Image 1 (spheres, rainbow, N blue to C red):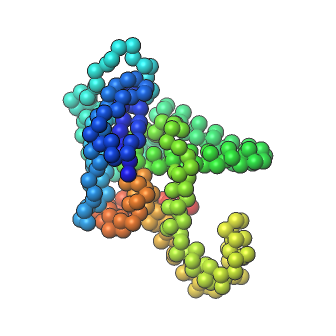
Image 2: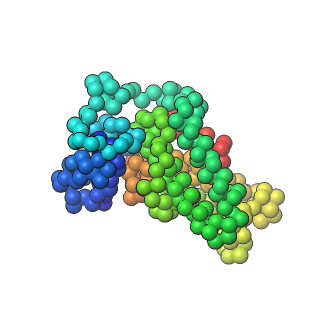
Image 3: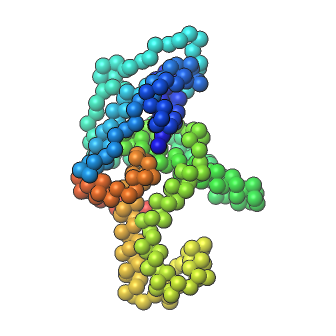
Length: 287
C-alpha cells in the first residue's frame, strides 16, 4: 500500500510506502521538508464513496497549493496554507447542475483548450501516423495509450474532488499499469456479455478470436445468434456500460483493490441515482 503526498511549495507529487508514515521527506524539486501522513483508515461496511470523495477534497485543500510548476526558489519559502475563503481553502457546495453545465463549457477556458488540443494531437499521432512506423510505431501507440489511460483516471479523480480544470499533462505517473487498469475495468463490466457470447457460439475459439480482433456487425450477429440470444447479449452489454462509471471511479479514487467493494458501489449509485443515471446514459449514447 502506498501513500500519496504533495509538496506544499511546488506541487510535486510523491508516492511512498506506508511504512514511511510519520517520517519526513525532502522535496527533490524545491527542497521543502514534507511530513508523511498516516495511511488512510479502512472503510467500514456502512461507508460509501461519498465519504471517500469528501476526504479527497479535504486532503486536496491541505496538501496542494499552486499546481503549476515554478522555478526553484533561491531561498527557503514559507508554506502557503491558503487565504481564508481563498481558492484553496474555501469550501464549495457540490452542485450537479452547475457541474453539468461546466462539462459543456470547459473549452472556454484557455488552459483547458490548450490541453485538449495537445491531447487530440497525441491521439491523432497514435491512430493515424504511428501505425506506419512498424514495431517502433506499435511501441509508441502503447506508450500513448497507457499515458492517456492514466490521464483519464486523473480527470475522473480531479472531477470527483470538485476541480473544473483539466489535469496537467505529466508523464511522471507511468503508463503501463494505468493502461492495464483501464482495460481491466472494461473487461470486468463486459465479462458477463463476453461469457454469454462464447456460450452462444459453442466456445468456438477461432470465431471468438475473430470477434475480439475485428468485431462483428449486426448482420453477421443475426446469422450467429437467435433473436432471444441477441436480446440477452444487448442487455448484458448495456448493464456493463451502466456499471462502468462507478467502477472507473473506484479505481481512480480508491485504487484497484476497491473493485471488490460491491456494497460501496451500490450505495454510491443509490445516493446519487439521478446524476449517475444521466452519466451512465451519456456513456451509452457515446458508445
